[in-house]
Length: 257
Image (cartoon, rainbow, N blue to C red; front, top):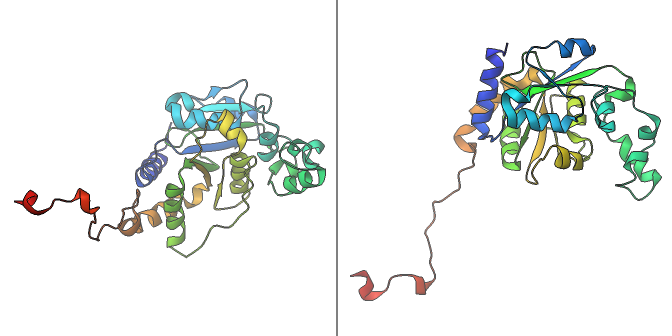
């Protein structure tokens, strides 16, 4: 059954950001059988993390989906999420050659992409769904948003302690690597959705992706509410100035009578 607190968090998060889609709950399972036994989860036979994210944020009840290691087709995603050991061809950066000048650049790029699979094969199934509908405690919360909405989240994050977001933005394996970083202990990660997210997740040009630890959601919401008086979204323009029109567009002389 969906959790009442998660439903509240999802509702407040959407409201404070005027988010057009839904925040996503993400859960990884060591045993695939445990994921497949989750009530209401739709077992996908051929998918990717970004595809599952699109289903979750757009399809609501039909967006609670499960994928096993065998059905997740993205080589980067499997390694990022620890659903396989990172293979040698990925470690060497061979799959990055499309994006880089030479093998050295490809390897350097790969070294900057965080992958749980570098430490071994840990998980065997992934569940994703709207945060307010998933029937399990999530390991991470993912949301896609505009830069303006992301600013609102950052202000909420900074409110209590002045803590700022730090990290690497690669634009590669973005949502998968962001989830992995949160599972590894980071509070929050922001990245530019990768090419795959645009192709198979249908993410618009104007959106960023954020992964958030469930442990900080309530603190984040409190900060977003506290900063609302000055920085509610959409941000209110300053309009305390006199309007000036071109002279030919203004009323003159007898036109004012």
